[in-house]
Length: 404
Ligand SMILES: NC(=O)C1=CN([C@@H]2O[C@H](COP(=O)(O)OP(=O)(O)OC[C@H]3O[C@@H](n4cnc5c(N)ncnc54)[C@H](OP(=O)(O)O)[C@@H]3O)[C@@H](O)[C@H]2O)C=CC1
Ligand SMILES: CC[C@](O)(C(C)=O)C(=O)O
Ligand SMILES: [Mg+2]
Ligand SMILES: [Mg+2]
Image (cartoon, rainbow, N blue to C red; front, side):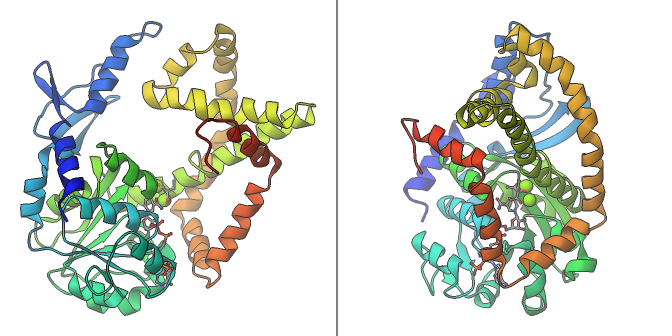
């Protein structure tokens, strides 16, 4: 199991830390420092401070000190030793089950998958090389065999299956989530963990698909970690070790409540709902003013995703501004506060809707239906058929590396 992929990631792990001056920093942090030096058009930035080495760092985030854990402190031999008596039972095999399960398996850990027999996930797990009776089991059997129960069912399914699954989570096991949803909104989900098990969270801040691709690239996704219940006194350490085991590069401490509030808010906001709404509004106004679909798409989506947003990701907003014309900079500086003012009340309403549980109840009701897959697919098809995204397909088809 530890074979080629594990050796490859072991090599990647060796490369993960480099010495810059007297501090050990990761390649990403190093490239960030490099990018700060490389900037010519922007003012000097506050320096990132590295107060600790060995993978645990206290960093200054814009004036707030926070601890970040990273992979450097958990080389593969240490992970193997730590989990030598454990079986990680991944329950559910959606986007996160796939990414976290394959990463932990490639890291050489003892991982099994538990899903509904002959459901869509069972088939996907088979395709990914999980073997029925050895590493692939019906849900109850996987929980029985596991010591660390990683509940990666859909949030709605975590709630609906809880009455059957809860009695199987016996003393000595660890209960793991990738979202604070089930335990924080217990009035609605009715998920109340047994009092004699550690309950922890590792929530990758990105799609399970990216959890996998970043791991394969020898990098690692940012994840949040939290402890809901610490029975053994080791819950936090276990969360950190599991975070690294499933392919995270950097782990940020939070609470279950903060994780679920920020996550539900972010995905409904800028990450998914907000961006689709903003793209569509801009596109529609361009079309109403006589611009062609290709021009409206290129000026709204293609330039954003292919040119400007990656610059924000690599170097920050000011860098992206500085990389655009002085004409663009002047206009964007003037209009940014207008957009902020227009959007702020929407974000306030959204945060309240998350905090008071409205979003949770809607999600439980919708995703708890037996037809949830078809119902979601129907609405996604409606997006796919919007003119903006149809135009986008033609624009993308011109790329040399185009894949449908
Ligand atoms: N998607 C992501 O990238 C992220 C997800 N998370 C969190 O990770 C967890 C898992 O999410 P994700 O990977 O997206 O999975 P999904 O939400 O897509 O759920 C998929 C899994 O749930 C199973 N499932 C659904 N309904 C039932 C049911 N009634 N009984 C048994 N199994 C059922 C499916 O099995 P079947 O095929 O048999 O229907 C499938 O294995 C959630 O807590 C989510 O919030 C956190 C960060 C990012
Ligand atoms: C942004 C959506 C997400 O929160 C994620 C990929 O992080 C999710 O729930 O899938
Ligand atoms: Mg989410
Ligand atoms: Mg998220």
